[in-house]
Length: 185
Figure 1 (cartoon, one colour):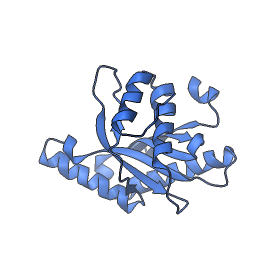
Figure 2 (cartoon, rainbow, N blue to C red; figure 1 turned 135 degrees about the vertical axis):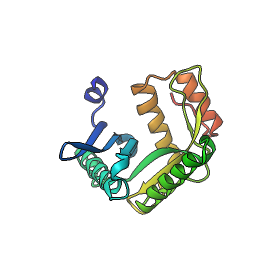
Figure 3 (cartoon, rainbow, N blue to C red; figure 1 turned 90 degrees about the vertical axis):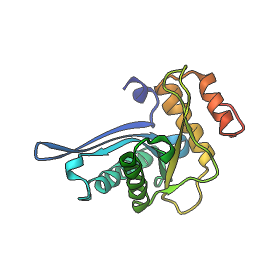
Figure 4 (cartoon, rainbow, N blue to C red; figure 1 turned 180 degrees about the horizontal axis):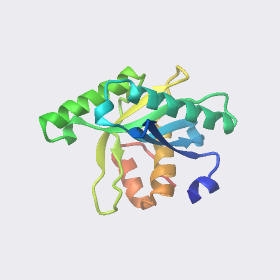
């Protein structure tokens, strides 16, 4: 919370959906003003309410909140929304593979496209661990190609360096492995 107060207009979003007293959805996100992009960190729906449009409504509400953040930061609208999700190579069972495919199809149905050309790495949350190769999905709201490299740098700087406090050297090693050509700081 302290970070959000100091780093305005970057905002954190924490969204919880209820139906009556039942928790049906949850999402967190981070507005990245430097690239005018919303970064969905986490999204989940109650397994008992899946396939009823709750996930799509949650994504739409996060988009609405990110647009509010963009306007508050002085932009006319939001450029894009981005998120990380596991690759099929990370799953171990047929059920996990099926869920991974469903999740990827869900994001595609909601206007997200898998980023091509960069083998994206999520940095390790603990310095001694290895980075994790993930899919990076983007929803381009301005109908022009977003600079994925700049967005990755903003995610690394704002989320992983300033918020998660991951060591700069660890982050730079990940950026180097992704062949992005420059250091974080």
